[in-house]
Image 1 (cartoon, rainbow, N blue to C red):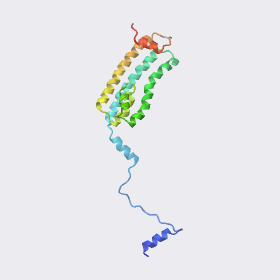
Image 2 (cartoon, rainbow, N blue to C red):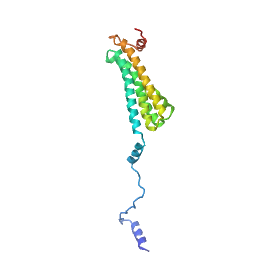
Image 3 (cartoon, rainbow, N blue to C red):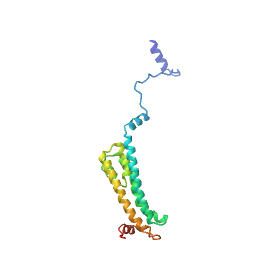
Image 4 (spheres, one colour):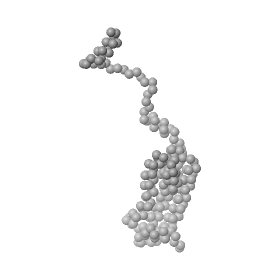
Amino acid sequence: VGPQKRVEMMAQQPGVSQAPTVEKPKTEQKSSPMTSVLKAVSTLNIPLIIGCFLLYFIGGYLIYSALFAAVGSAVDSDTDVQQFMFPITIPLVLSFIMAQFVIREPDGAVAFWMSMIPFTSPIIMMVRIPFGVPAWEIVLSLTLLIGGFVGTAWLAARIYRVGILMYGKKPSYKELVKWVFYKA
């Protein structure tokens, strides 16, 4: 029996402690999770994302500020505001909920149509852009967002014109529609 065989036989006996073995260095090391994240981030078009973020942020801010200005001019107290806040916040909440589905399928029909609606596009497009969106979709979405702002500002101005004079009267949705089409 050779020396190698004797060492193996002794190592198999109970009560004999085994010396620690030194593993050979692996030529191929596993990459850390941080490395894969950095590789993924390096493929993103950061200037496009930042530019679109600024445009969508400003557009979304303007469209929702016009809506909130219309509501603010139509009501007198905090309790009256609550009935008009629900329709304004629904598109925002819906955008955050739909963002989960958009992440799974960024080029799907739901993602496309939600990114074209002016009230949901600021959130949905910012979810879609890192996955790669054609330039024409970004331009169309921004155009619709600007158009939505112009329309919303026009509606807000019409409501403001009448609502500021109706101090003390609690308006309804039907009355707000009348205010929009009111001819002075």
